[in-house]
Length: 74
Image (cartoon, rainbow, N blue to C red):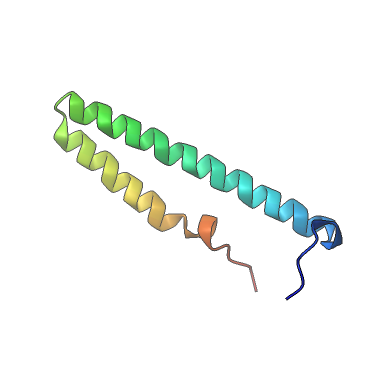
């Protein structure tokens, strides 16, 4: 299989890939912040709040599958 050369990709494809990478990085930062916030809530003894935050994060993860697998409008 020949190696893919980024210079041979159409500019719009490169731009799309850059946008996806930026979105994935932002998503990662948001998840990391959620983990820090949950840890703080647990340390403060707010178990119910931490569980609520984790449930919200799971809902966000479930809703954000297009970050991992982008969908294309037909």
